Length: 232
Length: 241
Image (cartoon, rainbow over all chains, first blue to last red; front, side, top):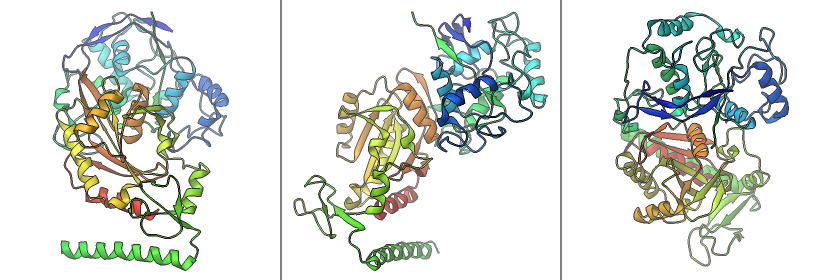
C-alpha cells in the first residue's frame, strides 16, 4: 500500500467551510483485480453470483463471468474487477482488514499527477482525464497500464470509476430520483453544497456518477480499491 | 370525476376485504387463522375467534398461520432488509438487529434530532401517517426512526426526543447504529446524506414502508407530500395478516 500524507484541500463539492482535511492513510497501489476477486469469491461463497441476495446486487453482478467461479472469455486476470456492487466491495476490503476510501480521501489522492500532489489547475491533467472518458472499454486493460502518481498510486484515472465508502453523500440538485428545484422538497440544507470549480468537468462527472448510482448497482465501468486507516 | 374514482377505489378495497373474509370462511378452518391481542395482555396467547381481548378489550388481530410459519422458519426473501446484520441501539437501551423487527410492517425514516429544518416536518409526516391508521392496525406496525447522526443521537437523547415529540408509545422505535451500519441502511433505502457540520446534515426526505418480511413495498419522497398512497399501503399490509 502507498502511504498518503494527509492535508487540506478544496474539493469540487465543499462543505460549509469549503476546505476538507484528510488524515494520513494508506491506499492500495492498484485496483482490485479479477484474479484477487475470484479468490475472494471462492472463500466467501455468499457473494457468488448464484447466491448473492438481490438486496445486495442487481442483475449485472459479475454478469460476464462464465460461472460462479470462472471469468469470462475476454476478461484478463489482471484487469480490474468490475460489475460488483458497493456491498460486496465493502465486504472485500473488510476481509482484508481494510475499508473503502471516502470520497474526500479518494479525490485527495486523485488530484495528483505524476509529479504534483494537486495538479488540478494544469490543462494537461484535465485533458488526460477527459481523453480517457473518450476511450472505449478501458475496463479491459490491465492494472498498472496508466501512470503512477505523486503518491505512488496507479490507475486512479484511465481504467475505471471507483466505489467510495460514502458515495451516497453526494447530493446534487435534481438528484437521480426526482427532478426538483434545488433544495425545495427532497433535501434539507442542500443549498449549502455547491460546485466550487465548475471548470473541473472531469471531477464533476465523477460526482454526477456518485449522485446517480445505488449501492446495489454493478456497473461494467466501476471497480474499487481499498484503503487503511493509520492507527497511532 | 375524482370523487367517482375515489368511490370506486373505496368499493374495490371494501370488496377485497369482504372477499378476503369469505375466503377464510370457505376454508372453514379456524386453524389457519389465529387472533392475538395487540397489547399482548396475556403474553403470547392466541385466540381462535375474532373479537376483543378479554383483558384490555382491544380488538384482536388476525394472524394467518401460513405467514407465521414462513417467518418462524426464517425464510426471508432475497430482497429483505433483514439480511443486514448490523447492530442497533434502541431508545430503550436495547441492542437489536433489524431482523428482530420481523413480523411487523415497518415504516422507516432517517432523521437526526438536532435537525432544525426538514426533520421536524418529517417527524410530523410520520405522526400524520400514524394518526390515520386505525388502532387495531397499530399492533402490527412499527414506526422506525433511524438516526443518521449516531455520534450525538445516543439512546438517551433519542428517548428524550421521543418523549418531547409524544412518540413514546410501543409502536415508535428509535435506532442508533454505527456509522457503517447507518451508511449501509441508507444505501438500501436510497437515502443520501452528508454531514455539513458536526450538528448539521443534508439528507433526502424519504419515508419507506416494508412488509413483515422486510421487503421494501413503498417509498414516499419529499416533505408534507400527499401521504394517501403510503397510508393505503400500510393499511393493506397491516390488515392482510
